[in-house]
Picture (spheres, rainbow, N blue to C red):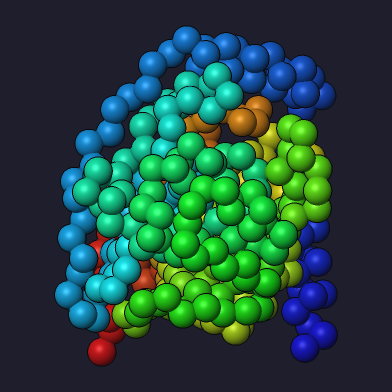
Length: 318
Ligand SMILES: [Zn+2]
């Protein structure tokens, strides 16, 4: 039991070293200028529309996962359609979204369970929640009910990390993350932040909204052994952001710790919220996946990059 934290600390040091190798002396200046250019460009640039086909509720024993965009994913089981951290708007505080949210209107109307990982405004969006049926069950981290209770949802459940809740044919367990619990911009109350393990139809998926690399991944892997890991891969420059966000390299270490078979990257390519270029996280992840033999579609363990609005279907293993 004492081995895991030591190993995690060693892996965290290894990751710091690997990231430091990428830094240059003038890097902070270059990064901030690049960010300014990207952000200014995004103020005026348009949003590329995304055509998302409706995803039918699967037959018993199957499930599907759709990458909607940013941290939003849709998990569809025979019994319920789940949306994580819905952010569906084309603008975030004036920043135009590069690619629209990829979800069919009929699927949005069918959402029965919403999982919120933390209170940051790109994860808990009132405008997006307002577009979801009031009949959907809303699961939020501790101390977040007050942020959503005026929206008219009939059932709001605060889930402490370690606790589980069953909704339809799905069991949701909240798990710890390493991320800030405040909402920001005028709301600095300490609120909870978590990830979720979703077990349904023989499939188990781990979802993180935002998190830094930490020893919790190995523990979650040991306890839940998820099949699929939905991990954010952006927001890692400047280097201090890695305290609370994963780079593609961090995400691959987390993927390994979790013991998952499929890594689906999220949170890239929509909004410039950090210094790296919008297309940099995916390019880096693809290169790492090729180098580590995780890119082949038939590989035992693999990285599955989904386009916005793209769906991957899973059948229960016999
Ligand atoms: Zn966040």
